[in-house]
Length: 258
Image (cartoon, rainbow, N blue to C red; front, side, top):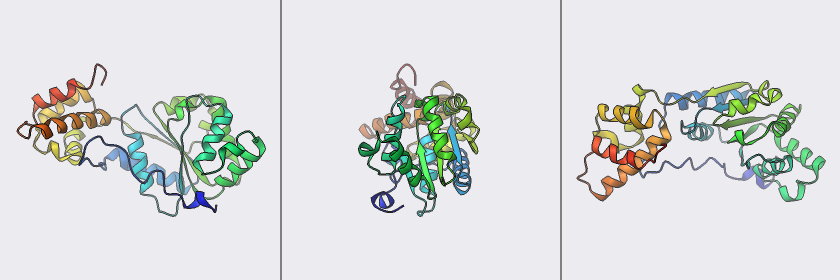
């Protein structure tokens, strides 16, 4: 593929928002599993489904794994609306490749030929929040992936993605790799948090594990929010201790359904 789309910067070059200055992406076991699954699937020009409950770190793990691919592997991100009709899905895919969606969306044959040309070189097409797509439109993805000229790997990611694909068995049967991203195990929590942000260096394992049991329950996004609130409190008053009192206060800001 030549032209502007071939030289655009990766949509995954800047990572994900971690809510707090000084926070780092942590190379957890879960992230390593996503990376291994992605590398294998891309090498095989296949389809991978990355799934798990909201807040377990699927998108962060996927973005980090994509950033570890060789630079010669082009990556594209399709942003889909909720329950897109087929013309909308076509437009999202064309836009992901930097192609003129407005010009081609209503020219079905031309749009399909253009997408097949874009999918021919080795690369990666990511569709996050794939659970937004209904079964008939998912079958369109299956048709594109089935084309003998397609060598771009398809990454389907989202909370409930496995249940969504169950409603599109033809596409599901073509998924090479199913990668579940589980919650953090309790034994991981203290070590992961101290790598995530130095704020937690002085917190006790007991306080962190108590907070995880009571509030975070292994959900990394929830811990990122707790970190943000606790960091802000320490920033306002450096004498604030990183203890159960601070953790309880930070968790009170999570709302009724953290």
